[in-house]
Structures are given as C-alpha cells and as structure tokens.
Length: 213
Image (tube, rainbow, N blue to C red):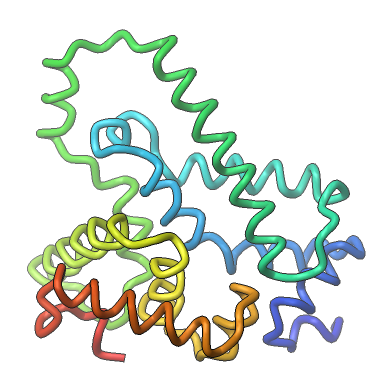
C-alpha cells in the first residue's frame, strides 16, 4: 500500500496525483467536492438550479481535472483548489450559455417544476450533514438547515464561507484547514471569527446543527 493512503496530508495527495497515482487523485478530488458544490450553488441562482444541477457541474469539472492534470503546475492544496475553481467557473459559464441557447420551457412550466420539488442538488448536501437523524421530520429539519446555511454562506466572502464549511460541515481541525486554504493559522482564525460573527446574525444558532461541533 502506498504511503499516501495512510497520510492525512492533502499536500501528499497533490504530489502523488501529479506523479500519476490515480487512487491519490480520486482521494484528492473527493476532498474538494464540498468546496466545488458550495461554489456551484453560489454561482447559480435559485431559478437556474431548477435547470442546472450544481452536482453535474462538479462532475464535469472532476472529469476535466483528470484529463488535464498534466497542465497543473502548482504544488500546494491552495493552488490545486484555485485550479479547480477556474475550471468550475468556465463550466458554469458554458452551462449558462447552453441553457440560454436551448431554453424552451415556459415560465409556467418552470413554476410547475419548482412546485414538484428540486431535491436532487440538495440531497448532495444533506448526505454530508453530521448526526444520525433519519426520520421524515428529522430529514425535513436537516434539509431546512442546509438551505439556511447555503443562503447564509452566499452572503459571506468566499474565503470566509470556505473556512466555515471546512470547520462546521466537514469538522476539520485548524491544521488541515490551514493546509487546504494555503493561509496562516492566524489568517484562518480571522476568517472563522469574522464569518461566524456574520453567520450568527443570519442564522438561528441555537437550533442549527452546524454549531454543535
């Protein structure tokens, strides 16, 4: 078994991936799935998310990352995140262009589709929530928490939103967040402090599951 499998370092996965290790690349991309999903939600309006699934944008980005890894010249997790973010933005722009050029549904049909639910993209986020609430009422509460968190994250600067996602959605320690974001501990602590202050004004923190960790 290769040493990177037992390593928690994202940097080790970047190095192994660039060296041609496909298993390392798969593990590396999985660490950025939540980040890219967050950005996809951020870049698409509520109306567009009824037609364009953010998870599909992320999947296309992953396929391109595997295909074009040889073009990645960075060495750090932060550089890798920036590289993925650039591809994601291009894919969002392409999806929007395709959507505009091929749009055929009427506003009435779109309203009807919304009334029938749009749980596909939300389920990806619900699956990442901590805890073991599985009853119908519990799932409903958790989905409401996802929507509230996403709406609040959209109102934060990107770096603050990512720091909070890593800490409260993934439960990562400060050391790992520092490595992934390529910032100092002081800088990350500042992002969390400012982000939390803003989030507490936007969410009911007493009942939200994100603040229990």
